[in-house]
Length: 329
Image (cartoon, rainbow, N blue to C red; front, side, top):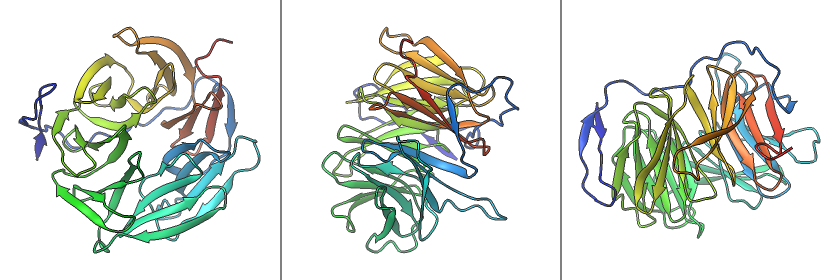
């Protein structure tokens, strides 16, 4: 397998380097030794992704039950009113989840994506023209509404309309994750442990190696892209204009889940059942707070409006809600 690349900070030159191992994954968490901080909301399913909606919907979790064959075919909505969660059935399994910040979520699936109305509780399938058999694995939305999708065969699709492909480029092993920061989409390829910038016109001018085994990625509200290098046990912080590694910091015990808040970058440690908040403003990440979590804290999300940190268990231990996370008591 050939890995991508390292480019200089502002250079469009790409170099290649061999990826020594296969894709990294989350470490198996031990049984918790401390009570999780905050409140726990039951969620017995197996989560794949989660996104916070700026509207009343709150947190949306993509997942499903494991009954002899796992399929992520439901979106469960945890409202800020603490009412019982609502489940929205998808017509078929999906692979990821992103939101538009206005009450809708998008979930890629074979041949297209689902447009999910989080408040109305409905999911509408949208087929991408000419891609009936394509396994879409990731999705993002540029500020103007233009969509970008990634696939299991390593292709990136920039759509020119909700259904039409404007540009397609195959240059990855697999598109495992995709986030949009400003007018740049960032692709994470776990097999090549790389991040690549993709522009709205479909061009991909820059790629960088992302540690020794990157697994998870999130865009924060301060223009940064946070990446967990699980195998290398580091937090990586990238800028996007141009794509540049700005900070890296050791995080032991299998860092995996990442998210950002207005003041801190959050990283989960699956081998320790913990989540840490780092202040990145000094140039060197500084640990500000640490909380015990539910078992297997695979997915993190932060609600800016409510000031709540969500920790979603990958072991059926529920959704942990830490109110005023990282804020003075």
